[in-house]
Image (cartoon, rainbow, N blue to C red; front, side):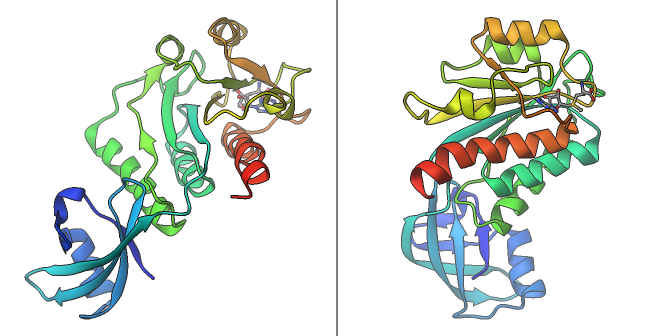
Length: 247
Ligand code: SAM
């Protein structure tokens, strides 16, 4: 069944007037007709079974006939702090990270990140949000991951919440990701910091450790930044979500 994230403002009781872009997709691309069922998500974690009641050039209207929590969200909230990289690589991390279950993305500027500008233009933010929305629809997520405005590593560390955090550092030789996650109470929220193509500077890792973030190794092979982002995120979700909850 086709799924669409729709702004809650489109709901009026059980009646949903689909926004223009979604209406176009339903009417002109998917060619769905009246009485066709679709799934609508309001990004609250709930999903609505909807029956199309009107499909014409004026508007597309549906009626919500059932509501339930979306079963597909991970039970651990992973925030990925990803150093800004070349656009295609960064956007690939947004898309694939959404598919595997990342809940929040924080783009960070580090000493060696190729992009040093934390002011991202509105059209790029909109593009990034579209990538997240489409990946969330395709992977049947119950929520669209949150995307923060870019910030410096120092700002990210200063504002880091009290939950556990890991920074992947290829010069770390002792603590593995499993070692860092094993034992103790399973966290409901965890952060993961991944550096840019040029890696974190030693003093950046030290600053992270001073903020309570633990440095971990991902093994002896050096992964590209985008590879490390996906591998480490998948391993965290696998350790904390799939293994422990069978989710
Ligand atoms: N210093 C690396 C080199 O020699 O090519 C450059 C950094 S690596 C391409 C990009 C990022 O991926 C790093 O900042 C780190 O966060 C992560 N990373 C890659 N391989 C890793 C490993 N074996 N252990 C921990 N982190 C790794």
